[in-house]
Image (tube, rainbow, N blue to C red; front, side, top):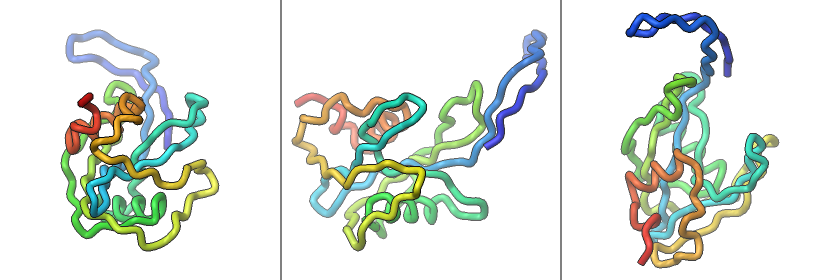
Length: 162
């Protein structure tokens, strides 16, 4: 990640002398379901907001790594699940006013648990929670733009009331 300040001229001619930009690697957010259609989620502590929130498996794309390889790696590392039915659904800019990276929304179907999760030292992630499409105990708890966007694009019923 690199943070830098730049001077720029907007298309309308306005000049900004101290515009801050964050350059970071592209990432994946994986909307994965198991063979029973349950959504694979976890709680993860997020330092910047000092909260533990419900999240989808996600992570950065390593240099030279393809998007789908990164998604499979992140799904396996964070959850212990793997899927052979995986595709890119959409590519989104997370915060194009200040950051230049892309978020790839990935859909993984019929994921199977094959091993235990292997979290990085810098991660504080709970064991996997399987959400049924009929379980509304978790309604309204997805509170990050990338998680809500990913679910809305792939499994919108998980965001709706019965």
